[in-house]
Length: 434
Ligand code: NAD
Image (tube, rainbow, N blue to C red; front, side):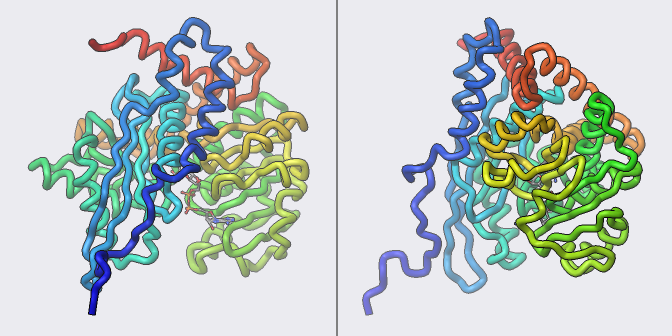
C-alpha cells in the first residue's frame, strides 16, 4: 500500500508567519507606539527601534511521541529590544501561539521592564502546542529540544526566559538543566520562576498579585478611595487574582464577586477569601463554593463594585461590556485584558485604569531579584524581597502618575512615555554600531 509522504508525522499546520493575518497583536502594539511618539521629544528620532524586534528566531521542535510517531512543533524566541540589558520574558505553551503574539508580548516586556526600571530588555518565547495533549515525558522532550534550539540566544547575561501561560517551575527546571548540560556548567540564572530548591526566589509566586495590590493602594490614596470597605470584583482566581484578592481582603476590602473558568459567584457582604482559595485548591475553581450565590457569567461586568481586577485572559473588557462597568478603578492583573476601544470607553466614563505594563510588573521584578540572587548565590528573606518589591512598585507608580498629570494622559500612555523614553535614551547613549 502506498504511504503518504508524511506518514508518522503529525502537526502539519502552515507556519503562522506565512499566514496573511500575522500582524494581529503586533499591529495593536504598533498603534500604542504611535500614540506615544508625540511625547518622545528628540528621542522620537529613534522610535523605529521600537517598531522592529531586534531578533526573531523561529525553530522547528521535533519530538518522538509515546506512540512512536514524530511530531513537529513551531517554536519562537523573540528579542524585541536589548538596549537596557539582557532579554527577559516568559515562554508560553499554547495552541494559539503565533509569531505576531510572541512579537507583541516581547515588546510589552520591553515596556514593562523599562516602566519599573529593572535593567532588562524585552523578550518572549513560545511553542504552538496544546500541552494538555502531551504526556509528561513528551512535555519534557518538547521543553528540552526547544531549549536546545533557542540555546543560540539565551543565557544568564543574554536572555532569561521565565514561566508564562501553561509553563511552570517544572518546565523552568528542565530548561535550566538542558542549558546547563549543553554548556557544561550549572547555570541557575538562565531562567527565573524556578522552584526555591533550584535557585528560585521566595516571594516569586505571590509577586504579581502583590504588585497589583500595591499599585491599587497607591492609586486609591491619590483618588480618595478607601481600601477599607472597598468592594472588589476579580476575574481569574489563580496566581494573580487569588493573591491580589487575598491581600485586598486582608487590608479590609470586601471581595464581592469572582469569576473563573468554572463559574461566577457573588456575595454582597464579602466572600471569605481564605475559604475560597482552599475551595479553588481542592476543586480547581470557584464554581460550587458555599457562602456565595452563583450568577450569570455575562452579569459579572455590571457588578456593583469599586475596584475591578481582570486577572485571567486577554481581551476580556471589550466595547460590548465596558459601558456596564461600575468600578471606579480597573487594575489589570492579566496581560492585555482591555481592548483599545474598551480602554477609550473606560477613560470617557472616568474609570481609572492601572495598565498591565505597570500593574502586573511585580512578577518580573521578583524574577529580577531571583536572577540577582542566583548570580551572587546569596538568598534574601521573604520580608526583604517583599519590601524591595513594594518600594519598586510604589516608585514606578509615583513617577508614572506624575507624567500622566503633567501631560493630561491616561496611565497607560504615561507608562509608555516613561518606558519608551528610558529605552530610547539608552539606545541614543549607546549609539549605533558600527
Ligand atoms: P493562573 O493559571 O494561575 O490563573 C488563571 C485564572 O484565570 C484561573 O482562575 C482560571 O480559572 C481563570 N480563567 C481561565 N479562563 C477563564 C475564562 N474563560 N473566564 C474567566 N476566568 C478564566 O494564571 P495567572 O498566573 O494568575 O495569570 C493570569 C493572567 O496574569 C495572565 O494573563 C498572565 O499572562 C498574567 N500575568 C501573570 C503573571 C504571573 O506572574 N503569574 C505575571 C504577569 C502577568
